[in-house]
Amino acid sequence: MSYDSTFAQIVKRENVPHPPSAVANYVATRQVGDLLFVSGQAPFQGKEIPPQYLGQVGGTVTPAAAQAAARLTGLNLLYNVRDALDTLDRVDCIVAVDGMVNSAAGFTDQPKVIDGCSDLLVQIFGANGKHTRSAVGQVALAFNICVEIKLVVKVAP
Amino acid sequence: MSYDSTFAQIVKRENVPHPPSAVANYVATRQVGDLLFVSGQAPFQGKEIPPQYLGQVGGTVTPAAAQAAARLTGLNLLYNVRDALDTLDRVDCIVAVDGMVNSAAGFTDQPKVIDGCSDLLVQIFGANGKHTRSAVGQVALAFNICVEIKLVVKVAP
Amino acid sequence: MSYDSTFAQIVKRENVPHPPSAVANYVATRQVGDLLFVSGQAPFQGKEIPPQYLGQVGGTVTPAAAQAAARLTGLNLLYNVRDALDTLDRVDCIVAVDGMVNSAAGFTDQPKVIDGCSDLLVQIFGANGKHTRSAVGQVALAFNICVEIKLVVKVAP
Image (cartoon, rainbow over the protein chains, first blue to last red):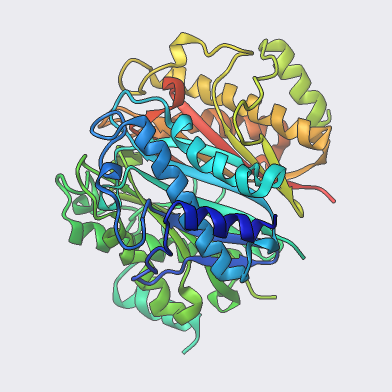
């Protein structure tokens, strides 16, 4: 099945609508040559952020909830990629994932959290979904989301 | 008015001299093809960082002060871009802004802070100043600055 | 002496074996055109992280230990670069270093810490080792490491 069909099937099954658009002086994506830069995304489920995804991981948010939030954030990122390219079938590979986890001091499982996004990318793009990655702890994030993730994608010629 | 003239007018009116140069084993910019990478910058006003820009936002630094610090940081970044390209008129567009806000736990308005830089970029470059963005909370920053920002810029052919 | 020979001599003298491979759905490097993106690395000495490199800088980890950890992390990053390019002699220059320091609130010497990596890069690559840089404070990092660093490298034609 094509990347785009797999994505469409997942967002339908998991009930994930398109995330809100940027409201300030920035944009969701910028393409330079075959590199597509994607703005930091949040675990929106449509217009709302589910309350279990708000707070610090290792505090009020469980690692399992944060991993689900990272998967949801990944789907929102791919909505933005699809908007830029018309179809995810134009993705060549995922280049970089920067995972930022709202962390209580002492929480050290940031990689497990970001696996929620990494595993999604490999589910959809196979080996081309593997990417370079960082996964680090932030003291605070916008709206009190538990995770924010940004991407760099290589676009097929 | 050209990008470069607009910038020159703003730094004159707002009394923002060139920031200090890097003092360690790094450089302000590196260009690869049409991508210009710019090092993290700080809210220097010339050689000094105004004291109201030192500390954590949500703590001793107000969100309004931090937004002004982000604008000032943006001007310093553009000094570095101009040094690399001789003139800001060679900017094609702003690709990416990474905004890092020195944040008290519980402060969640990082995007509002980084708007200070984003709005500046659009003031100077218009639609070409819109960029992909992340805006996250750091527990601490160098010199205790309230904000650090780095850029990726696309250079015109 | 060539970049690759210098690196080989340093890792032999400082007793730094190859770091572990990525165990989740990501990879150490991705190359797009002449840009090589490198995943965040940790201060592994072979399979272990020396205990003096675990914890927050400004807390249980001294700035001097963290600087040594940043140098060690740099060597691990270069192992990954060498794996991708077969030899470090194919490096054109270092484009970007993102240094993330596990920081106690109030610790503000992140640049000094990341100098451990920056100085290493210049030791090996000379002026071509100079890079754009950010150096910021994280509230927590994976495995409780005191520093995580990622790279972008320009590959020679």
